[in-house]
Image 1 (spheres, rainbow, N blue to C red):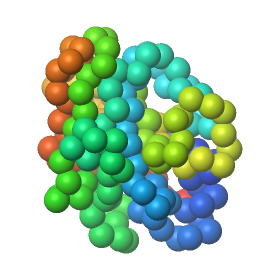
Image 2 (image 1 turned 180 degrees about the vertical axis):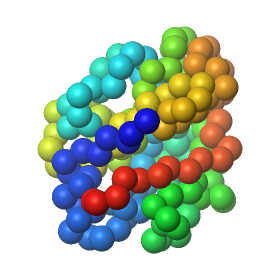
Image 3 (image 1 turned 180 degrees about the horizontal axis):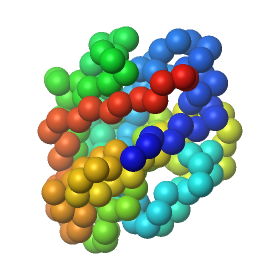
Image 4 (image 1 turned 30 degrees about the vertical axis):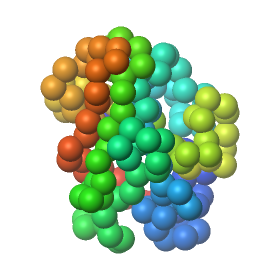
Amino acid sequence: MTLRLSTGFVNEAQATGSVKATMEGATGFLIDIYTGNRPASPDMPATGSKLVTVSVDDAGTGMHFEGDPPASGVMVKESSENWSGTIDLSGTAGYFRMRRIADTGLAQSATDARIDGTIASSGADFNLSSLSLIANAPFIISAASFTFPQGL
């Protein structure tokens, strides 16, 4: 269980000193959930099939974390936002990618701020009660916290 940070994310976070500002950028971030194994690095194009994109109210609007700086390296979902999406394709969740809205996550990039993480039913970066996602069903994240590695 280890979040993988893109080169662009690490460089920007070190320059600005803010994990929150780095991930959110000017318009917030989205979370894509894919099948299969995550790529070797978030700098690489996403692999597998995209099952769902999560945004504010499933509207494509960027999501945000609560205040900055994080408490003990933990960033928490903005409580006033409803993080949701509609599942596009049935499949088994394998990993997630957090990305800014302007970045599709589908091209190689050493400058885009991205985070990749594991998905499982327990002991992963993102734990789901069921890894089987069914097309056209809603996908809702009612609570979330992300623990960032030290040494950015």
